[in-house]
Image 1 (tube, rainbow, N blue to C red):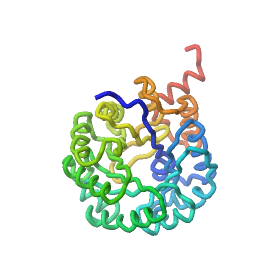
Image 2: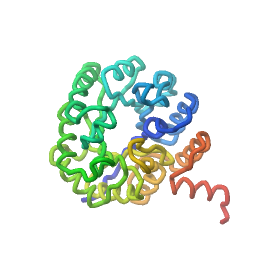
Image 3: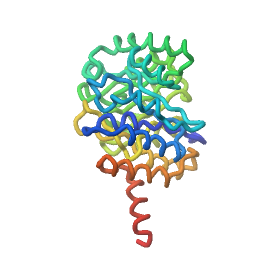
Image 4: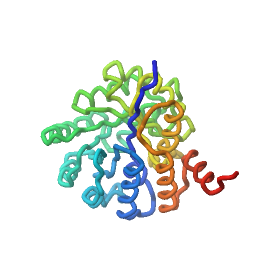
Length: 305
């Protein structure tokens, strides 16, 4: 199949990337990161996570973040809302879109949200109903689509089953997440083949972590199959607290560089995005995991070498 002409990047760095940081990050820093990402051309930003501060202290300021955004025209600022309480809080803050997250692994679901896969899906039903009543679109996530830290291999049919349930429940788009980054291109294609039997390719997205250095290879493989929505995190921020050694999401800068090289449009300014990655990693004292970002920073510092 031919590559898509345009790919939409979903920037999850402000939410998925920062929530796992051990040290507190100021609301001001989060807001500036979101503003810089919008200025770089990112048109879909997951800005906050309306989860319990008891479990994710880093996201305790979700209300302040959503209420104080310097909103740009044409940019969607979404939030993660795992339950009805989270959704109601997000609605009070004027959220435009929300997301719910399930898993293709029973063990991961139990460890992550303390319930079975079936129970998690049942919890989402009132969230979808309430969101639909208010005209707020809902995106669905499926974790562990290419492997689980507890169960190991995950059958593509299981991924397809959970994805179909979210889609039929009303999620306009389902993002398929390699949460621990163990997937390889052939596995990614086989998983996508199973899921796309029930869900149109245009309503699927991918969310690849780069623990084993396979994220870009996996992305290339599914682009060939028709995927045109990609989740990523600036500077490769993030990780999975339930998977030892799991590194962050694929770096937004690396994805844009790949897509630029393939002639696929994103509307994103790579240099501005890379500068944002350099800024945020310095601000929170974390390494920049984007190879493109590091290379561009070195080039700007030593242009003649």
